[in-house]
Length: 199
Image 1 (cartoon, one colour):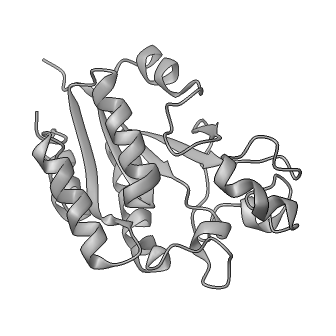
Image 2 (image 1 turned 90 degrees about the horizontal axis):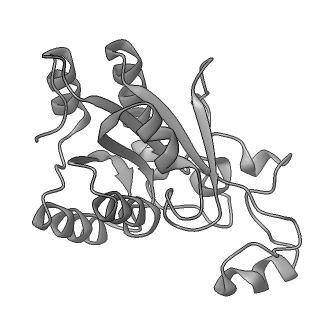
């Protein structure tokens, strides 16, 4: 019997969230970048679907959260299409055939086509990496629970938060609701063995 199909969601690994001099830089986003690269490489090598979940916002800020609107009003908007800040942080890059899903809020599922894309592909295992853990990673994971995906994984060392305490507190919350939180090495080993995250 074939293993359930899996997808790796790479969330918000964009210059505006990752580069140290960016307005919305997530502390240690660059630190987790090598692990995100490893996760993407492991997924591709194992036939796991890679889906890039990113933010794009109108320069006027008409589609951002209310709390972010003042930043856009001051001309300090982020992830505006066509600007360097909206691009994936190097060396990350999409490969032919990999889907890009654009979101406007924390969760990759909120008012996007992500759920439809995954279900059309028969995905049952959802693995998440990227930034930042208490916001977009957590929001996406919680919505995956609400949508009844049977196996959800958040890669502990391929995600980042403002500090280690916030990171561990959020990972602990996830483990409490049966979200698996392995390292990239542990997850990749399971993929190589023909499995995915814990069922």
